[in-house]
Image (cartoon, rainbow, N blue to C red; front, side):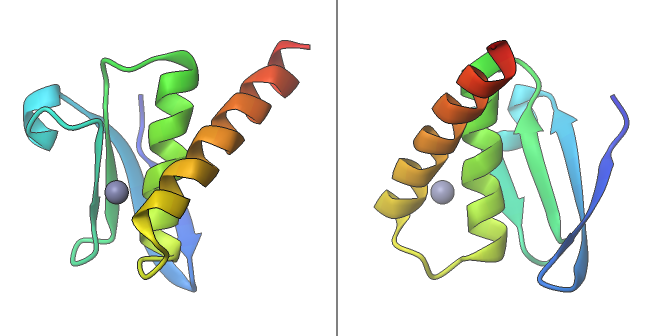
Length: 86
Ligand SMILES: [Zn+2]
């Protein structure tokens, strides 16, 4: 799948899928220097959405409490999944 170009806080970012080893077994990674979000290509469905939202919060709101990022990511993933499946 081709990378997606995103503008986050006025800066150009890239979103891409990678092999699990590229994120050292984690679900995703947010690289501030390269302005790049990497998502493990083995996750699917609601799990993939959860990681995507989490990393977007990491990119845009780095100072936000990590537990809040997790909570919001889970909420957004669940609600988005429900909305798309209707
Ligand atoms: Zn995180």
